[in-house]
Image (cartoon, rainbow, N blue to C red; front, top):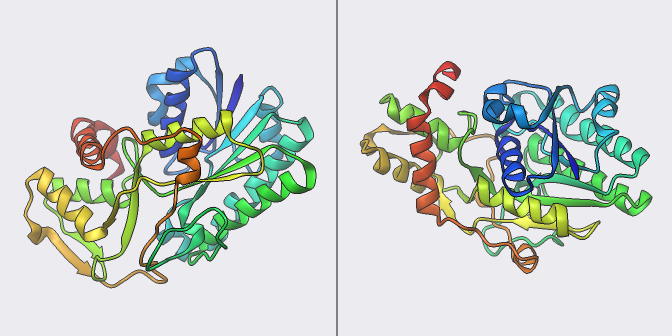
Length: 315
């Protein structure tokens, strides 16, 4: 199989590239990435000799056609993903996440691809105080980011219903792990703590997220690529619901840094309180997370400690 991985130089994408190379040695992997601030060639440096890389924008049909014509499947990680950035610049999120997905879907439909996996987020369901969202629950996005991802999901599923394109959609909870750009909570706080800087926690810090180790997510996405039923949506949750303050405290504890580094700041606009998804459907497909949260978090923190050459230039 020849797999096109869009956004493959980004955080989850580059980890998925490695997963495919390790678990499907006969596959050909082609990466299409625009190389924005979060999509970095450094993320693929150790595997460049084993993949085909094309720099290009998923909104550019000509660039997409140059890559997709020789592929059997597409896994679309390409997206603008940071909620804070979407609040100040919603337009770029709509362009990449909705228009870009449409461009890919059109190209895939024209070629009759075997599989199209759209990578989504649990944020499309919105916040809930109790219980967990299933794939059948209505979408209720709060931020421009989550709204643009909801739009992409709906468009992708419409291409299955209308045109019969074999689309699957995954919706993952908060990912963490190696190569994550340090605007996200865990790497941002790890790097600030290492330098003895304050850790700005929004509001009370009691907002809850479900944390998913990126390599577990990649294994789940791989399973959906091969065994997911076209037209279906699959929630992928880590089952690790923790408040932002709890995550911050665990980072400081592992780094042996004082709690006095925590600084509460004004809450984010439209800040959802709790995300929670039911992953029973994914488990029925045969997926289980492999590392417990504490091990995965410590392994992630240690990766940043050992790879300061990767992140120092970003600061």
